[in-house]
Image (cartoon, rainbow, N blue to C red; front, side, top):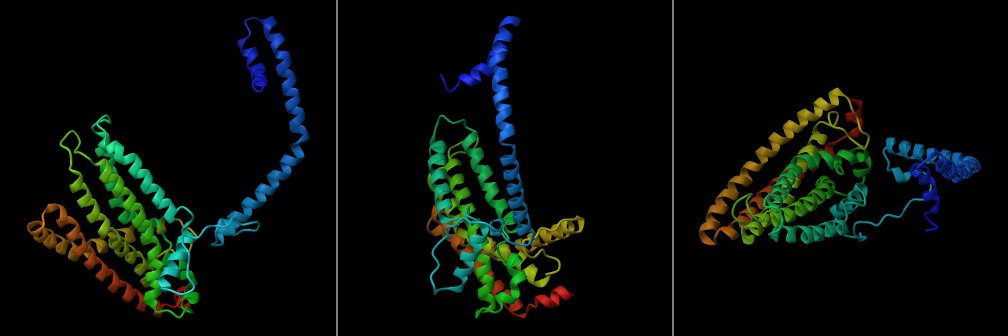
Length: 351
């Protein structure tokens, strides 16, 4: 009662039945206004000092971002960030690049985040997909939308996630000093965006499998069939992401003056035109790269369907397609490694 008493005093004039009651209730409100005015005047200097300090920190963050660094690299105490995983002193070099680029991507892309999302999807999507009380159109609609989003991520993901050569090629002189072969650097740079995309797609596929329990206004889809198609898509997704990321990273090595390098964002009509051209070219190259794997997928699917049945045929065919995509990605990474070893940033900048 006493905590809310000042607020009750403020609203009493609005509820006054006549002028006399209004004047009686207006006195306490006027006293509150005077007290509030005195508090604001006394704290004016402190408020101005806090505003100046906040403006200074904001200006430092903006300057740090424009300079190509992180906003938390400005002066002041930095909040300690937890690494995505422990990095050993010795091991595979590509894992070190993965560790570095995952830190660059931010705290949202950690194993804990993906496990929490997967647990959330199972807790929400499973009961809703199996529930008979939910509207008949809602679960399959959510399943279809998530499946479409997973497909779109193959094309839009490489354009959004740039924690690869497109970001680090400005430091090519430093990367060349490492005692590594070119293909090792290229492979390490591709792992982080591929891992992030794969994690997002697996969560979307998990939601699609749990929610797409029946056709809209139609028959139910057996769980075995949903798991079969979901497992096949999950098997082939990492290799699809790797192939889709090879295309823009190969473009930055072949046409560095046409591709945005570094963290700084560049705008303009000409940049928009270049991005549209590269997007169209990337889609065409990606479609061409899918032809061998799609052909082998179809052949393996029909053979496995005859031998082991429909449910096991989809994952087996997906494994065959993933092997072809892995071979294509390995060949492209080896070729890109040769390009990186011959790459000269100073010559490209001068031209």
